[in-house]
Amino acid sequence: MRDVAIIGAGLCKFGERWNSGLKELMAEAGIMALEDAHISSHDVEMLYGGTMASGRFSGQEHVAALMADQLGFKNIPAVRIENACASGGSALRQGYISVASGIHDIVVVGGVEKMTDVTSSEATTALGGAGDQEWELFQGITFPGLYALMARRHMHDYGTTEEMLAAVAVKNHENATKNRFAQFRKSITIDEVLRSKKVADPLKLLDCSPISDGAAAVVLAPLDIAKKYNDTPIKVMASTQATDTLRLAERDSLTEVKATRIAAQKAYEHAKVSAKDIDVVEVHDCFTIAEIMAMEDLGFYPKGKAGKAVLEGETALNSKISVNTSGGLKGCGHPVGATGVKQAVEVVWQLRGDAKERQVDGAEVGMTHNVGGSGSTAVVHIYKRAD
Amino acid sequence: MERASASLWRKIRSRYNLVGNECQNCNTPYFPQRVVCRKCGRNSKMVEKQFSGNGEIYSFTTVRVPPDTFKDEAPYFIGVIRLEEGPMVEGHVIDNGIAPKIGTKVRMQFRKMYVDGQEGLIYYSFKFEPL
Image (cartoon, rainbow over all chains, first blue to last red; front, side, top):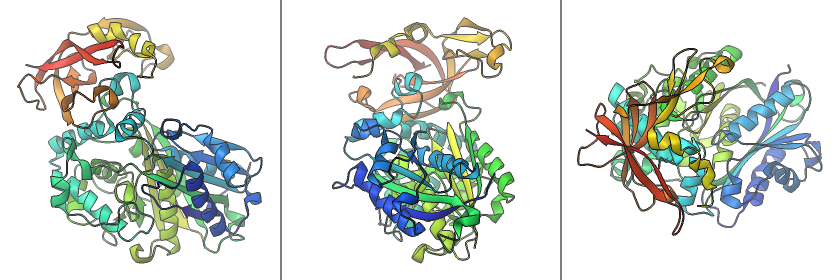
């Protein structure tokens, strides 16, 4: 196994991108990543493309070949990775494996989703496919509904409050105001979150990540040649993944995402670090309760304690641990297939010291956490500066 | 709905009567049915099991933004129900005037779920009524 580094990172502006389709979004992020890595399209040997539901959203399948086509990667092998909302993180892991194995040197990992061409009801149905079609979606359960079921039980068991949930959205919107790629560059207050329209009690509209268009890309290379391309390559210290039952009610617990806990434990072992070594982390805050559970399942807080910590500002930019500096899924947007790759892009910028007004002081070790469905897949990566 | 009706239709026996199954190797009951026992894997020995329909609410929510199929029904209650035999299952909680709470006892009822378009099939399933 070879050490693997990220030598290029690219993103497009997230949001309602009326003038851009799948092709334009992918090309924007992809070209930025190639320029960042100082390579040409002809240097790329393999592409992994993460997308969840391009067929439902755009009627377009075969997205990896389309990405390679649009970016001028002539005739290279390309594979689409679909793992619901963890498609991007899973694609990154496949890219990592293919470089680590020695099969390919220069690999591009892209993620994309074009979600705003359909109605919100159609989008709700499409995203529902990340759960159990026969026993969750059929019964009228939506994704906000699944996370609401977790939130209700978390509140019951640990005293987590709606204010604590709201504090996650407030923090992430605040971070998003400092990110020019973010969908929402607007501060909100706890009161605004609490007064926003109810979606699935106790979750309200401002507890939910939005429907978004967007794409992200990174370029991977073996660490030993990474300096040829980039002065500050970012080493991938760990790339882990775990699964759990597709159906929420069948899990051991509704108040933890066991797949996250397992993937995180392995990642800490592989990277030889612990939670207290992480300076900056992008977690999967598809709903505010998801960030609170992630903080607990990733080992930053004991079970039941993360909500209070968020409310007290411990996870704000340059506080005890800087969480979702990009604005997270809530503030930056959640084009599902792009999200896992975007998280890596943000951490690369943070570790290079390129995150501008949202820079975490002295960030050395970073982490990303990408979840599929209501916790059926979790992908965790740990990164470190390698210069 | 564009989705093939057959995929939903073939589960009607389970849905109408709350028929799950149980692994005879480890005595773990399942609802909905599993083809393979989670604990025993390839050694599983699955036999059908009739569930009583009694249970209690483990968690619940009110869905206000529904999927296409339930667009005329919202808002409605959804619960995670712990069946008295052990398994947990998601389902509608009937609004009979008793506000759902964690711990509320419920009983399975047979109910209409939705109609597939203007002239399509009518789908039925279990719902849970607070007692």
